[in-house]
Image (tube, rainbow over all chains, first blue to last red; front, side, top):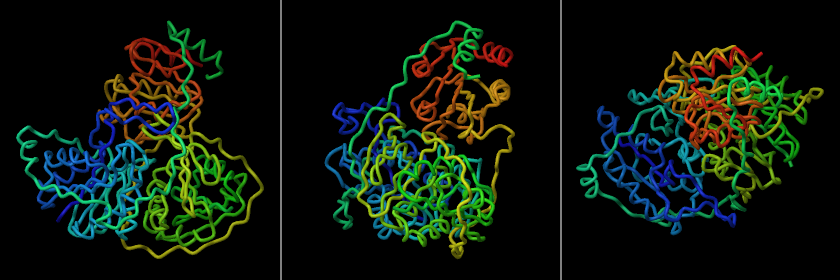
Length: 252
Length: 309
């Protein structure tokens, strides 16, 4: 079985984002960028499926700016077999909407015929939580979102999902789109020899035009603001003072 | 303008708080029709009809809709979509599962986790874990929107609106439910609780979480946890507050042994009063706290539990 894993290049999760003063967006110039943490978990899961003999090839695909090559090399160094870069933007500030990403991925799926798409549940930049579900809809496939456990059993997968009330297990027909949550696994670090080897693994470069997908955004970004700041609080000296303050504020 | 609102229905029961908050947001967009779907949804439909501002309720009952499987629930919504300009739902895990699928089937973008309605086409939503608020204007003919419930007040009550039945779709054959592991608790539900007491990595172990739970029970509060505490196995995932967990905005949020990573702040910084108890005075949580106590939680929390009430 071939596994397709879409990966996104995003601002590193440790970086404090800065909103540009003119409201035009978030400043991404000279900021550390990394693979979306949820996508890292998806790559790791694909590698574990391969190690368990349930997958035989892992193809990673990224859609965005040319620099997403680095993100793909990271996935290759972790253990993916080959990569596809779909260049769809020149400016690092241009985010491709999940609907357009899903349409491009649907075309990649048509070409590659994977048995499973493993995707991160959301990208930590736009926090949309949509691409996997949209891809599944466009393909008419089954979907299992927010996975914390995946067992592939023949033509079905048993997926445990993290939902508001606890955990839900569903059985989905393959091929399926599964989006992964934090507790599925802990991604490995790429070793130096594997980073060197990854440089020789195949990386195909395409453009969005190759897939005939219209990238015109459906959502026009009117502005991007700083969230309202909280007023500064106070440090209390003791539990007694805390209780007093909470009573004064009518909080307890 | 007409709005179709997917109610949050769990095992036949309406999640009133989440649904009534979404109704508040949806009322600003037009006449609200609430859709209650499930294997059993009639009782939920009766309850939804009494939410102030609801003009009509549609009840769809059928085995295919049991456990809110994404494929058949999305098919149902798409089959009804023709009559509506907006399709809205509270941003629960159920809706986050279903609504992007609906949007793609309608060839429109989903607008997730909306925290403000500017006009019928324009919405505010947090991005980058709430470190920025983006205002987006949709060019799509239909808007598919999920509502961040923590930023809207629940709509009140009214005399019941009319309830109609609609047919359930056939089972998709793509997925089936196997089991639910639902945490049973007498405590209030995390996203609708007036008070939340959360523990972080500083709590140190699953056993020590009893300290947090005791304080919570004294206050009649829900219990939350940071991602660090969940990842360390101290607390179950459904307690997680943050960018990838639940977003809460209670009247009082007590953060114990939580350093305050931006991913956690994303889930609680709209709380009315924030209390932080942490032994590290440099912890970023103190920057958002109204009342900070620099102290060893193992002494401060039992003392606080004793002295409250």
